[in-house]
Image 1 (spheres, rainbow, N blue to C red):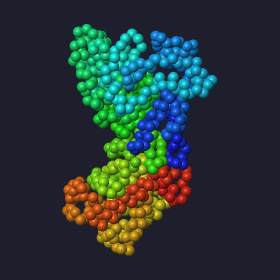
Image 2 (image 1 turned 135 degrees about the vertical axis):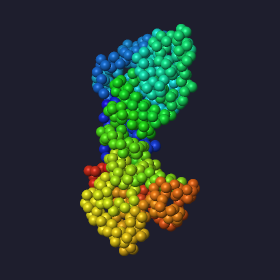
Image 3 (image 1 turned 180 degrees about the vertical axis):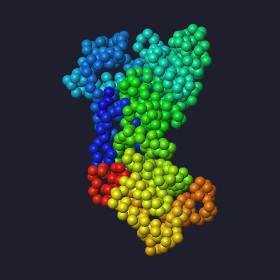
Image 4 (image 1 turned 90 degrees about the horizontal axis):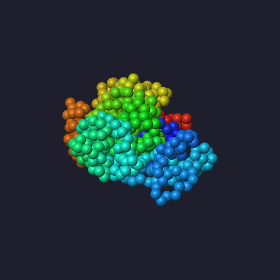
Length: 576
């Protein structure tokens, strides 16, 4: 139904508004309060009761429909004239089934008015949306998730269904499809129990019905079968959420499904299965789904389905909204890389920024420092995801694709990066530093490495403060230069050189050091206990991440075709 979606903004303040060619599956990700849920509400509004004043969507472009297809779609919703109603010429009585609440509404719509809009003979989009698009649109969110599995009145099943469970009960193929999905995901069979006589109930059975009569009948065999099944109200929230979403999605021939946080109440494995199932259903039924999610597992499931997918990352920082389309080809390439999969890189799409360190012990330490800086002084990086590579050689393989997706990513490396020219250059390239600067800094790096060697020092154990005084400013200059591009080298040497006041034995390294450090740091110590720590640790996170690096990754970034001067070249290196 929806062919294109145009937003009111793009990658940054200077770029054109994002125009999205709608795919069968369209996923919106981003940090909290970035507008994902609001976007779904605005699509629903445009397909039901359009109003001005939208904050995210500029307009939608619909697929082309001809008169015959419109009449056929309306005919599928036609119902008998309600008693006491007058039938107007060129009008049709339409059955509106409310999935979220039990009940039926019958509207009389002007078929001539709808057809004329499709044929371009009038511009009454509001009437077209209210009386046609709305029939094929549904929005499901977390607040209404559990109502989808509640019992519904049975009513007269010889007439048009008045609720989604009645619609499912009447359609053998839909029940079989839902049953197949629940058995694959939950090892239980979905059934509709009519034995209460006045209502339909969803139950999950360990055994598959032998035939339709065993599920739909009222004889002793049917009663025994349903008595042995488990009422879904007695199941976990995750089971209810999963089953309810699948049942609601398949109960009607919806063309536009809007699903907000489908992963709510689901553990990661079930969230991944739900993503794969919804993406597959969308392809089979030739409809379109728009999804807002915070779950990398759900996104991974959608990716694994093999269907065509759009992923759009929304942000809203300091009053500036952005939208960036993440190429599905690049995402598939990332997910085929075992290193990137193991780091949980998909989780980066839901944070303001990412900080990548060399090893897990480094990640744990810097993340803890950052949390304490925020706890005691509100001076750390906000909404940042800390992840680790396997070593400094692989940091660039993580940072580069993140920046290509427009996600701010910084690297923290030990000072011994200056010992290894090849690794230094590769990391600089991954961070999009211009080659001319890499070459000049490479010469500087080589000179500093020689100074360390001539002084009998090891940059893995010694830092700026240990160099001869006349060379300290040279090293600081190199560190400041690469920090401008988001590479932060530990000025004291390596992780184990932080907090010398804790007197941790020098033989301890990595996990052993971090465990000893956390033990001595205590649970509530704000970590600002010495001037050295205040200058080094506080400076690294507060100045570099908050007021320096992360600020440059915000609204000031310009697209690559607007590079002018050194400042804009630095901005462009982050993929903005």
